[in-house]
Image 1 (cartoon, one colour):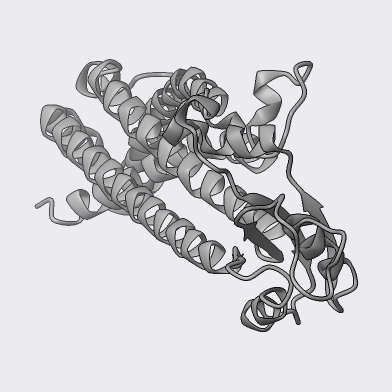
Image 2: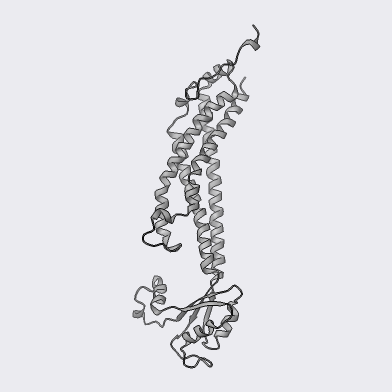
Length: 310
């Protein structure tokens, strides 16, 4: 009888543990490590999505807005503004300025509220003369410096601040946060791959004798790699799912703390609805990605190990 007459051995169905992998590949340590990395990946992903959302929110609110400060708002205006206080004269001039969409004079209570983080709640007790503040929505063609020169004619000392400068800085900050989040995700992916590879090598070393026997009897590399990859896919998927579920309460807590800085939400809005929909859509992909990493890493590691067997 020749070697060709010997049929390759076939392993039992996939649910059978022919190679004793349940003992060789622990279902405790590896899922725990993957869960920890998935937890970090969720936080990095939330940072990237949150930075993008805040940048979009600030872009709509701040890029086309000017802040105009008028010292001594109740004092009479200069020539051409007879009968108007300085703040009212500035508002009247802005209303007729090309490129200005709206100009709203904030009340003294609103100005005091803006200053309360630095001066406290009771600004009247400090005997400070608060300036008049106007919130101006302008078209992109409006130039702050040219507008400031015109306002000096009716209210000298008026300051015009273009919030677009702050938006550029915030956009740069958001871009930096997104880059850091991408780097963190890449690092987590690399570490996860390394952990799975080490676990696979440990499992191969623990079951070397059994693998030598079935491999010598004709079991193909694909059969053996399939057993390892199926086990590791299950462990990595379960660990990543646990890490994602564990990170959700922290995401909700962060959403509650950052709600005042985002888009306005009413009291009836559920806390879960404050998280960006893109983040909710991305969370289920993390366990799937972890399972794919487990499967691919196991396949490559096992086949490379079998290739050097004598």
